[in-house]
Image 1 (cartoon, rainbow, N blue to C red):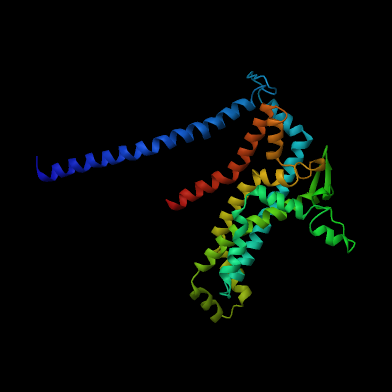
Image 2 (image 1 turned 60 degrees about the horizontal axis):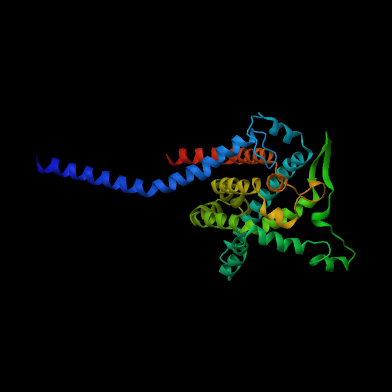
Amino acid sequence: MSPAIESDVKKRSRLSADHLTALAFLLPSFLLVLIFVYGFIGWTGYVSLSNWNSLVPDFSFAGLSNYLYLFQDFRFQADLRNTLVFTVLFIGFVIIAGVFLAILLDQKLKGESFFRNIFFFPMALSFVVTGVVWQWILNPSTGVNLLLQNFGVKPKWYTDTTILAGFQWGKIEFGIPIALFAVVIAAVWQMTGFSLAMYLAGLRGIPDEIREAARMDGATEFQIYRKIILPLLKPITVSVIIIMAHISLKIFDLIYAMTGPGANFVTDVPGVYMFETTFRGNYYANGAAIAIIMLITVAIFIVPYLISSRRGEA
């Protein structure tokens, strides 16, 4: 055997050994993900099509009856309305606040690191802690509201069941629940730091030569940001929208710790409904159906984004 052929054989055997070693390390994680993620998703889907709505398991086939029940249920209809309103307001305010704060911090001001750490700090907290703190701050009988009441202002915050710009359709009243604004404030306060970090990194990645060229052409600072900077930050905006939508569509802990379902379900969301239906009411099939619907809504945002990202990398 020639030296060249012998070297090629050794190289192939070495690569094969490396591949086997890599597979040996990846296999346990792959099996765990396969069982405890995709396996349980499949199990949840199977339960959602059954009649298991009591402590005694009943796996007889129920078809789509659990899903039909949910879409005819007043509470679930209110949950869908609240999720839509919360998602739109949450994403909108997070993007606006993130862009505004990133532009301010990008001005190379003194104490930038101090302010940056302050804005990033809420991200270190869990949604449960945030919910408890803001529940106290916005409680009509505690926090800043005691001071406001001295001036004749008596805000209800998350106890207000008024629906703004609402219209009736069947049993559900569509519109914007005022009580939901309190939850949006808490969520925006916590997640603005993430948006700020993304936009600040994007701004720092834009060469100064682009801005200088625009200034030499007579563009004002407002025109530079509106026609040059913000369009260049579009990929970051898409990423922020996807990530924030993923958080808002499956939100549970913040709302459960802060308000719960609320009066007339004005702050209720599918995550809270699923928890109470499954673990308090023992309606396992209905709870599984809610979980599958939540999974589908999240997948509607995440899957196209992942596909486009992979195509862009290719």
